[in-house]
Length: 450
Image (cartoon, rainbow, N blue to C red):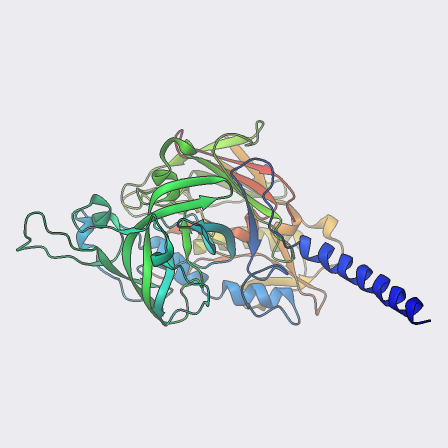
């Protein structure tokens, strides 16, 4: 009898262990096809490495929460103006550098590689990670430079020190020839936070690829709560970005597919390099703003709701490098924002066609009882050479507690800097967004990656 019970419980143990292993495998963050295909996860995903507060009642409230700092994000995007002397770029209190980290990728820093989960940001160039001994850092996972055989700090005389954004701690006069001084810098972040870091170099591991001598900020102290817990990976267009630092390795090409906010698993992907990118993909030219070189500007020519072209004055869409006006594609803003006159024209046409009773909820001012979504008009963004018909999941956001659905677009902040239209990550979900910086093109194709 004892033998019988032993084998019985042993069999039950095997079943439980097998099921547990199968469950854990879904969170194994395995790479997809190709050596340079990184998985992407939303911070609220079931497999998120962070102790983020999980949504408790309604996804629409969660999105409203995440989007609450979008106005600051847009102010940051509007403030990205390069000085003629980059070494003297000042910190603009509360908005010089602001990013919202909704998606992360897994990377390895140093030799041997130390695993970090870094926020993905297409409107920032530089990368930074919290380092050992960091004062005020919120993560228990800190990069340990002392254990990496390839780590080194960057000297003040190196060109990268003049390219990093923020206030520098480098001597400007009285330098001794042959002497070396580490490049320290201070950056504001998120409106209520700042960090102090040493500009450093080390190997950056991306699945099976290694980018040697990658320049990044090694954070030693943090003030505030908005700094991404395990750092940020800059995918902007500037000289400090991953695309610039990786040189010919990726030929200036990358793409990503962002899973829905509701996707539990590490199902999105960041593809690096031209191999494996979509072949049949429509593209539109990338526009270059020398005063805001990090941002991915595109030429949005018009917007349609259903079959009706929305009457938007050209000055609200046109690209103007002098004022910063135009349209950018950004991975860090949560909901798409148009300058107020453009937004109101789009909203009014949408309301006219839906013909419902509307209420407001957080950032959304066009919420209604959704009964037949087949009757909801499609919103089409017309770019030069390319049209993007927003899927319904990227057009409406639903309340899980009520039958309300809201138009998932909002007005840009009504201030002196609100000249940017921003195509945000909620409208990019389950699309393959391809950036070809070498040929100044951006492409968009449908791809479900939940």
